[in-house]
Image (cartoon, rainbow, N blue to C red; front, top):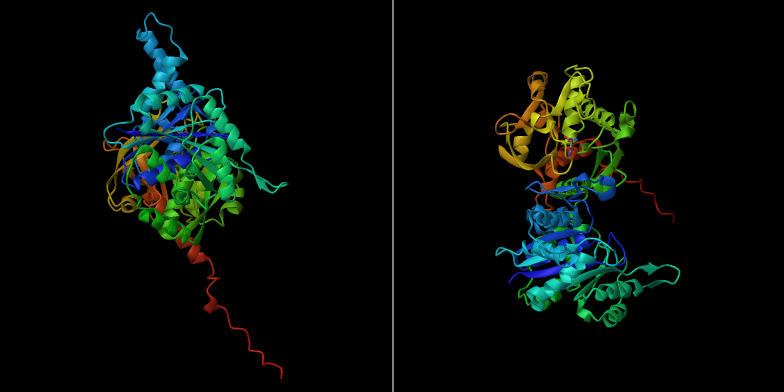
Length: 553
Ligand code: GLN
């Protein structure tokens, strides 16, 4: 029988429920259990694919082309499993399924209602992940207890325990224990209120994960235990960790996985050695390196969450601490580029949509090409690198993508015929994993150590094959193409330390202990630049010894 853990949140949003679920998933995997995770999101969009990154942060793409919540990225990075679109369900997608069934006559003669039809569909989404290959399904319920939209989800997970048996379900509630400066105290009242709210929906938590910025004393845990009717060992303090990957260790020290396994009747000990080794590597990664991310949504770094994580993973591999400089693309237009980019060790031009900031990204790509600055272009990033090369090396005046300039005489990036007639916005891009054949000996083939690679995609526009031979003739290396040779998936330059663009989003497949090869090579090139250029300030042998002053006698 598959076991189920439901993670809810109270008090405030952005408490790190996703990281708690991910960390718990990792701890269970360390006990040899087979784990999968999903997120139920209470909003009405069918998926986050049509949402503005400012609203929702990054859209995480799964292998099968699901456009999902960014928490799925944390799940994949922590439990090291590739998830699918089934691991993210929204209110919108649930209603869509119920309404489609209603139109097919599935409920003929009956009134379709939130209970039982919507709740049944929610339960079906939970159950479908509980296959024979899975020991534990962790389901994170998005939103905060007390929200209007969350009610059908709480009702569904309440019923679920009755359906599958008490011994197969565990409820974990994540709350905040704030510190109030003026009174110098940590406060449990918000936790009490949010547990009361949860209980009013019929759910008694088995464990409470209390987020706090400083450690919570035993006396406060006891108070929470008494007032919320949770055994003391189920009151777990998730004190702010130094970095994400430390969270599983914090939760383990607090006994969360022991308690959850006790409730679910799961035996075994956690072997944390591999994760501890990762955390030790993170802690000792100290070689400084500065990498600029030239983006459109930089005021909300969550919009580039997987890019940032992939850069950090690459850093750990090199023992380097990557400092990310978030650079607004408009700030590097024209003459401003030199000033903004010259002190960086590398740049990343990430994915994006729409015209704003494009010229700044083109300038940055050109600056990197001219100044041997390592540069990695991701999806839109590769497109602007191609535009830059077409304009400034090949001399195609006004070269552009038809996404930004319909009237351009040289649409070096354009829609493919299959995309031209698409009128819907949701789920209509080239989505999910696609293979690419890499040119033997190229920078990308050496980085991957393979000639056939699979990366995830999310875009409408493509490198225009009509320009391929002209650009190649001028020195652009199309170093990765689709197996049928129709689509250019990777471009690079010979003789540059690292100037590589990919139509894919390799950041989605990066893992803390297995960085994406292109990010690893970018950071390697960045380190060479950083260490070649910087004086060895910290090398004490280089500092002349001070003259010896004879002691006065
Ligand atoms: N806007 C571009 C396209 O649709 C790039 C998309 C992206 O970077 N994900 O092709």
